[in-house]
Image (cartoon, rainbow, N blue to C red; front, top):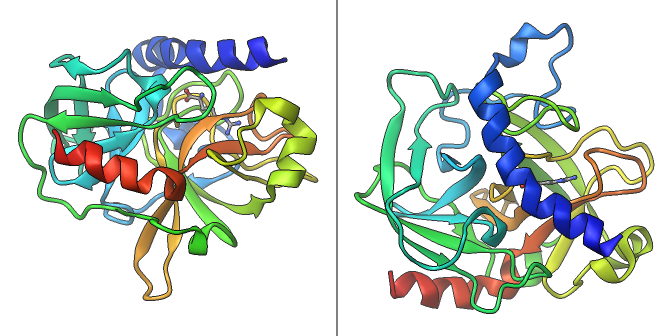
Length: 258
Ligand code: ARG
């Protein structure tokens, strides 16, 4: 199971690129649109910090010129001008899309496929959009979370042209471990989903995107980074997200070096 899940994690980015290339299609084109999996279309400007990355991942604006994404979405650390970040639109084909190239990538130090699934991408110029604050304590690692992305709307499905969103409840480490056993790294990962019924989840191509909620002041706060899961939206198998509060200090100090 472990090898399989790791393989799924590695392959999904490549699969997402291929899917994105051959089959970008409007979410509304199918008879029953199922964004993310089991979601709906986000409104223009609803989640202004959302970023689509050209390797087929999501991300969020941590700073105006830094995107927070998943370690498994990038190849390593160093100078890198190969990634394009698209922001400011729910429709990836919109003529008002803001597109900026990367200059550097910083993959979580020590990342080896188990936990530590975060990375930063430095942009060639700042994007003038609201950033998404990250959780620095565990206070918000509970309740209902928002997820959003341009990834597949069904397991193995096409990447989406329009940003899709959904809400998923927190799943405890104990319940998540019951599903995934030792593949789960509880200190590094936070789970969310409808464990009894399935039906709502992130999926391939959503990786790197944020899982977020409102804080006590009513502002958006990022608690997770889309990381992995068995299939998508399967009953008994919640989505697994990097636990942002665990890495907040590392992320901040890493960002300061970019
Ligand atoms: N690893 C996937 C990606 O690269 C994300 C999978 C999320 N899966 C889930 N069941 N929540 O896009």
